[in-house]
Image (cartoon, rainbow, N blue to C red; front, top):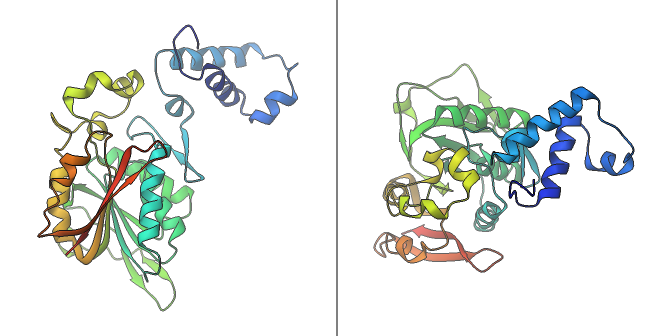
Length: 296
């Protein structure tokens, strides 16, 4: 790992050894005398070679933790990152006291944001949307694993515009629960992309001009459409802001993660005639990480 210039080499070596053996870290330290079988050693060598080639360990193991929940990940989705938890925290704070908030997560990827919010907001109605059908399959699998598939819907969209003639499950509300009516599959024209309380997104925001600043593992293995957004990184954020105005109810919130140098450019897209109470939330390093704005 050191020779391949992999960051945190010992942690990576241990993580991959746990994966190869199917054990946890406590087992590694409790059994230092354990010798690997030839099959285990071959498997360990294989995953070490993959990691040395810059493949992220999350794609090798197929898992990543986010918000204390275990998510399945694949090269079809962006790997959830700890800094994105600031977006979840921000939305939860804004949603405090709301009754049955309606939330749409744009560019849901693995579903980590949508599912974390659904996990915390038990009466919320959550929709996760993405342009990639492969990503949506991962998100649906995570919803099922976390037993949230009855409360979170997923739909293929280009930003906030539905694609194709597919359909999604429709939630019917009872007095105290949200029940899934699995036999009802309304056409997309019946799905109303309006009156949401929140439009939430961790959109792609890296400009092509900054590709040389991206980590090698991200550039080589993570989905380009989830990382890059045009020359200046605004090719998704700009239509997201425009389309969110029509999707939100008056007083609804747009909340999105931004790149480290994008604060001024993003704020410039938020017209005072359409957006008020604009806030910028820094991460733990003081870097502008989340922008929120309220529809007037």
